[in-house]
Image (cartoon, rainbow, N blue to C red; front, side, top):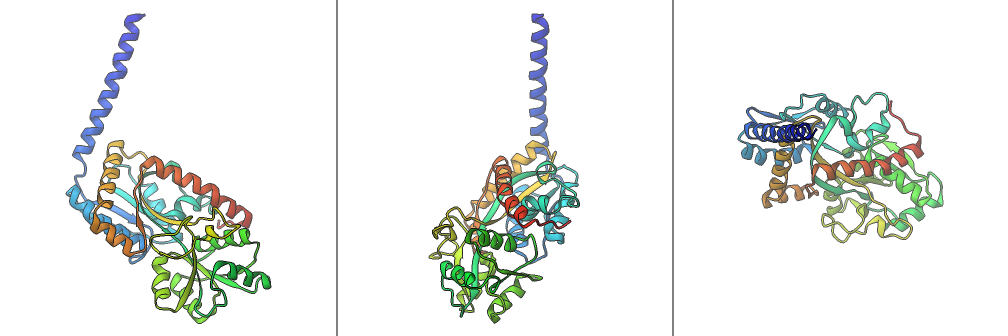
Length: 329
């Protein structure tokens, strides 16, 4: 019996050592060819620019070309699904935002075609950005409290723009409506440029969007920003009060992020190598400068921390979606 146990332990130890050496060999031998980084949004979008910002130094470090492959559509779900179904060999990566990973599974319960937590392996967070609440430059509301008071005067009299049902711009305002006990009229638009134009013209009374889109217009005086959706004041938009700083809105948070993923089943050694490389690239001053210019804070994470982030955010946004009884199937 003792000999049997000794043999079993030896075999197990040998197996672990073999797996470790195999993993190390895979990492040492990878990559041998061009790597595809899928961005499920159009060229010129913030995820696309972020992807190109980190792809070049990653490519140099790996000694292989990383090509950006834009696969837009369905709010990022099409490109995300493509990577979820790709071969897990380290040659297909994904840079995407919250939506396809956090809210899409609840919005598209029948038709999504992938499970973010089962079909994709996180590599690292890349960057985060709060949203800002904007209003026309001549709006009577000069702060969040005044905006809410204005909305309470007449139910549905104020409207807001979003880039569609289930988008971050829609769900963030729905969360604010619930917290403030107000009702606004939702007007979906085809994109943020159209929303900006509507706010400048005074046709739209409010909207949430990332500062990378809003702040150039705010700085030029064409629109006004009232609050930011980070829990504390953001370095990206200094001197702008957080929604959470207003009494009754403690804990209000709506952060946009971009992160890297690979198909589930990608060798652990490659996942580790990519995570280490992402952290190293994001620590470079020149990369940080480019990311901050987009109004994003460069921020890395472990794969496990990224999974936890998705899970915790899903709880928050599922509550909003279910309260709206919203489905996009």
